[in-house]
Image (cartoon, rainbow, N blue to C red; front, side, top):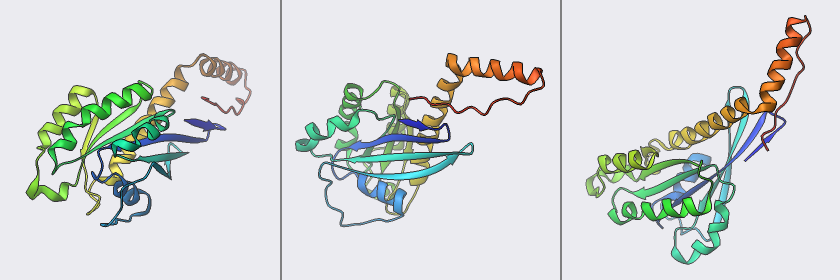
Length: 210
C-alpha cells in the first residue's frame, strides 16, 4: 500500500478462492465490464488497476487474481505480501467451494497482515435454481469471522461494483484513521492551529503513510 504526495493511494487487493468460482470474471466485469463464459483457468497471477475518487483523493486499487488450483498455490503465496484487502470467493452452487473458505482464510492469515479488509463473496447468484449454499450460511460465516459479505453475479453484473468498492473504501477509512492518529499528523495539526490563531495561513502539508 502506498500514498504518494498525500493525494494518491495505491491499495493491493487479492481475489482468492477455489478454481472456477468466477474470480477472473468478477475482476473483468469490475475492471472492464466484460464477461467471458469460456474463460480459462488463471495461470499464476494476473492483476488489474482501477481508480476511484474518495474524499477528493485518487485511490487506485491494484487487484490481483490468484490461481485457485492447488499446484499454483506455492507460487501465488508470495503475492499475499503487501495486500491490504481480500475478496474470498465461493460458488453458491458448489458447497465444497464454500467449505474451503476456511482454508483460504487460514492461508490469508499466514501470508497477509492481520488488518487486511476481508469480503466474503458468494458468486454466481444467477444460479439460484441449483443453489447449494444458503444466503444465511454465508452471512453466518462472515459474522463469525468478522468479514464483509455480499452475493454477486459476474454474469448479470449483480453487486460486482459494490463488492470491490466496499473493500476499497474500508481500506481508505482505515488508512485515514491511522494518519489521523499518528503523532506527526497531530503535531502538524497543532502547529497549523497555532499559526491560524496568529493570523497566518496554515502551511499546505502533504502526508505519507509509507
